[in-house]
Length: 311
Image (cartoon, rainbow, N blue to C red; front, top):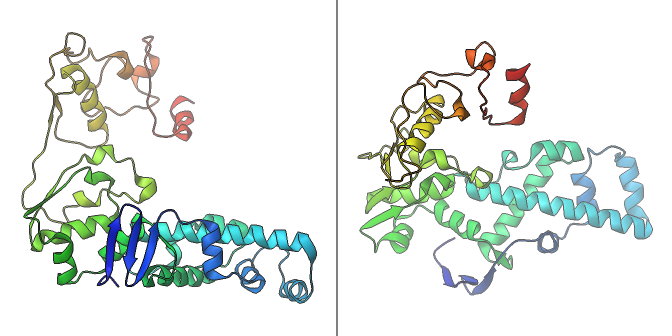
């Protein structure tokens, strides 16, 4: 699959003799590649309300006019968008083939789609991508192709010229990239840098997997606990938040600033945390802070948590 795959420049890729454009896969190109017929569309939507086999058979045997054509076009576009989403999720994973869990199952059920038929269509599209017959390839696709091919020759061709790989912002790596990078420890040194608490790319498959010591045991671990971006005051507030989610190692702010480098004593933290913030602090309705007349702000991870604390 990857023996003849080459990155030419910023906008094209070569798989064998074919030159493939690097870009975004759009619904129209998926529709054209899969050639979604009315029969195929009907099979996907066979669980939708009012889509009995009798109705589908009659609808397919006669010309239903512009309205039918528009309906099929809309359904085809919906199918293509779901297939694109599944391809993306698959590329971010460590899985070797497209499965039903790569799909937005709640949306599929709501629309009355058949997930097994969608899996078949998506597997067909993926085969066309890796064979070079599909005209577009995304960065996620060719990285997935590299991740799936664990041959010694491919790894040496891609990474063999390096003595050390330094992988920064690793908390935002998806499982596929994480596996691809960390397996290079057999041929060179790998340094992984990142902050698990700063992961913001969960919507692109980031799972903090690079910091899973059980899955990828590190040779040595160094904790970068000193920051020159802020002083002790902000660090003290940050440590209060970090302790609340189980962090044991304190953060140190070493910046020297007249407005930031404060030294709050226990019980003198800023109003955002109320009058006190002990190490084992957990907010509850029975907490004295709820009875305090001091103004403060409570931070919740989601809006639905607010009523349970206030009422």
